[in-house]
Each structure stands twice: as structure tokens, then as C-alpha cells.
Length: 235
Image (cartoon, rainbow, N blue to C red; front, side):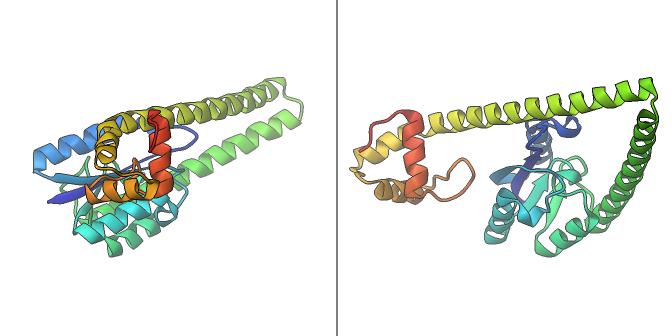
């Protein structure tokens, strides 16, 4: 079975739910190895789970690749696709997909898991909201301990947001540098083939089966960015 791997992390918090990119890749790698799946493509989004799958750029690309190649979409955990049962139901109509941590689950079972997970999230959200409202009420009434907890919570959220954004930016840069290094020899080969314009370079890369780091076809702009990142003088 040919598969398209799809990974998602939160923009603000890459290690969301303890499931970072490396863990997701390992789950899918192991599942593919155990079940004889052939990975023919991989896509990655940095988006909140509250954003529906079809509004995420790379998820849309992954779905399109599945349809074009007749492949099955695979995620490490069901919530990497969505936390909303309606989203999961909609995706089931578009493509076949599997979850690496429960590879034998069929569509009916996945639908049940999604419904149960959504219900549990609603319970947790309600309990959290009620507890926070009670804490704020005590703080507003003059309870010093509650006021201190509210202040610590606000500072903690601000610090976590700042750290998450910085980590996301640094992670994206490292991945882009790693990808660019794998493309250096291909750029040089294209130049050897006398590609002298960015359009010609983009066409050469497409003709030889190369994709951008996001899995898209090369354009002159994408080719220009790659050349600049590598520090190669072109043409």
C-alpha cells in the first residue's frame, strides 16, 4: 500500500500533547515498516488543531497527493488530522486514511474514537472553564492566594507563547537548511546542464522529480530562495 505521511504540530507549541515531529515520524516509520507500506510523500503543517484540515495548506496538498497517486493518508495520531468528529467524517468521504498508532482500525472504529475524543475534550474544557471562572471570582473578591495564582497563570501563558514562537521559527530554519543541503548537488547539476534562468532551473528540478521542502512543484521564486539559502551564485 502506498501512503502519504501527514504531520502536524501547533505553531505556538511544537511539542503539543507530548507528540513532536520526531515522535510522529517514528510512529509512521515503524507502522510502515511493520505493514509493508511504501511512503511516497510527506507533508507537514504548523497549525492549531482548531483549524480544520481543509484550511491547512499542507493538509490540502497531502489530500490532493493522495487522490492523484491513489495513496492512503497516514497520521501518527487521529488528533493530528483533527479534534473535531465532523472534520474526521468529512475526510472519510475524500480519502482513505489510517492512524499509525492503531493501524488496524477501520473507518467505523475511527469514527467512534473521534466521537469519544471530542466528548472528552468538551468535558475537560468545561471543567477547566468552570475552575478558572471560580478562581477569577475569588481573586476579584480579594482572595490574595487566588490573585497570586491568576497572576502566575498570566505570566506563564505569556512566557510559553514567546518560547513557542521562538522555537517554531528556529525549527523551521533548521529544517529549511537541512533540505537545502540535500539539493545543492542538484542545483549544480542543473547549472551544468546550462540552466541560466530561474524559470529554466525550476523546470529542470520539476523534470527530474524534485519538490520544494513543502512538497510543491518548484516555481522561479522557490528556486531563487533555494539558491540564495545555499549561497550559490546563479546563473
